[in-house]
Image (cartoon, rainbow, N blue to C red; front, side):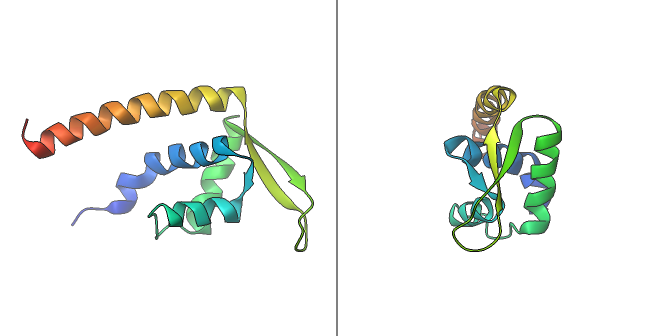
Length: 107
């Protein structure tokens, strides 16, 4: 059987960066949006380590902000490096997708 988690590893990182690039957001909201997009298996144990890794790489940064419902939330933002990463990810993804589509179609 196909190991879905292995296939999604790098892809998920790029998708998280895209979500953060669309608007500042926090962890739970990122997970919810990923699930809305069809990544039903994505949970905190998958997402938060990616956020930590992206922050270490300076692709994203974070800031605690007041929450209307309880304690402060950690909001994530793209850095300049993150904007460059997102552009590169989109180009690479399109190339890979095109190649895989050709293989699957037998072109």
